[in-house]
Every structure is written in structure tokens, then in C-alpha cells.
Image 1 (spheres, helix red, strand yellow):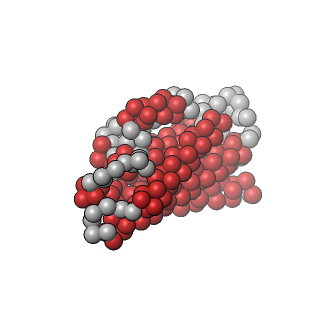
Image 2 (cartoon, rainbow, N blue to C red; image 1 turned 180 degrees about the horizontal axis):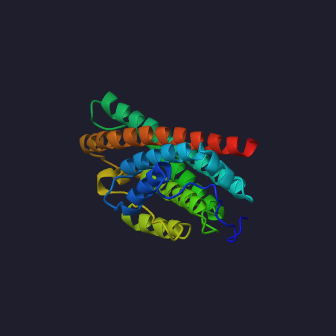
Image 3 (cartoon, rainbow, N blue to C red; image 1 turned 90 degrees about the vertical axis):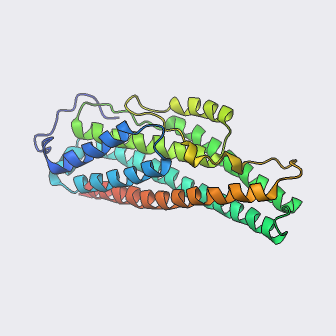
Amino acid sequence: MATANHSRSNSFPSQSHPAIESVEDHLCRLRADSESTSVCSKLASLRNLHECINDLIQMLSVQQTLSQGNWINELLEGSLKLVDLCALSREIVSLTKESVHDLESSIRRNKAETATSSDISAYVASRKQIAKMVNKSIKNLKSFNNKSTTDNELWTMLKEAESHDLSILKSVLILLSGENETSSKRSWSLLSKFTTENSHVYSESGAEDLSSLNIEKSTKNIDSKNMLKKLKSSDMTIQELEEGLEALFRSLVKTRVSLLNVLSH
């Protein structure tokens, strides 16, 4: 664990350095984001932030600062957890996309009358599997330590970025679980316990509501036309999430490789 008594490296670039300003600018945008900002937009902001962080890590002065104490090991541990969390989010998006398309196909095969009971059962089972995966991942995040333990400027920035990563990826998982308003509030209350003081938990915006994806196996006389409409409206959000997570995953891996290079030098 890094201590709070590390002094700032004399080689650390000044706050007026373009690389520092670029990271700070992206962090400020994320701090200013409101609940009405779409999750997909926030994923894009994270990707841009990590591109700037990766450029920052290429600087020799920054690499020297990160080599102090145990900082690099802590950052690598955090980056691995974020890569894993993003990979899980991508897996859940893929499962969601597959189950939605399967149900749409079933309804269309039956000339928009209704899906077969077996197809509905398979869809409901898939949604339950996704909810279970989300709940498990949230519980596993209890051990995630993304609090800054020093007032070093570089360390504080990188830990704040980690905090935004964590919060927004959590919001993606909740969005994909399609929880209703009541259960969502309970989950967000749980999530907020693991959020650092310098960030906030991002709730899903109304434009990205996927709660209509959750249906009961016992539901009878489903309005197939209405259901098709809801499934179709979710397609765009699912596609945007898939693309946003893919881009963020690549950026997170790139950042991790840069950190590993610092450790190996």
C-alpha cells in the first residue's frame, strides 16, 4: 500500500504540460456529467480519457514518478480488475443481444402472433442468468480499492480515472440487467458504498432504459407487436453499448500494457 508521505518527484511535469492538461480536461468533463448524460456517451469519454492517460504514461518523467514505492503495482492491480469488469460487461452485452434476437426471430416465425413457450422460457432463463452475473460482479467489487492514498498529483489523477471507470462500468451492468425502478434504487444504494468520494455513481438515463427486456415466464397473452417494438427499440442501445465497451476495452488493455512496460524498465 502506498503511503501518503511520498514527495512529489522533481521530474514530474508541471500542471501546464499539455499531457497533464489533456487528462485534467477529460476528468473535468466526467465530473460535470449529469445523470441525463447517456451511458454510451460516458463510455466514449472514458475511452478518450484513457487515450490521453496512455500518452501521459509514455513520458519518462511520469514513468519515474510511477516507479516510486508500490504505486505501479497498485495501478496494475486496479487495471486488471477494470479490464476483467469491462470484459464481463462485453460478455453480458453479447448474451443480451443474442437473447433479444432469438426472441425477435421466434415472434416473426410465428407471424408476429406470439413466441413459442419454449422460446420465452429460454429468453427468461437468459435474463435471469444476466441478472445473476450482474449481482455477483457487484458483490465482488467490495474489495476494489480505488481511493487515493497520497496527495501526489499524478497518482490522484490516475486513481480518479480508475474511479470513473468503475462507476460507469457499474452503470452499464445495471442498465443491462434491466432492473425496474425499485430494485434499481436498491442496487444503486449498494453500488454507492464502493464509490470514492471524488466521483459519483452514474444512473442510467431514460433514453437507455432496458427494463422492458425483463418479462415473466408466466406472462400470458403477450402483445407480440408491442413486444417486438420494445425489443427493436433496445437494439440500438445494445449496439451502442457493444461498440462503446469494445473501444473502452481496447483502451484499458493499452493502458495496462503501458503500465507493464513501466514495471519492466
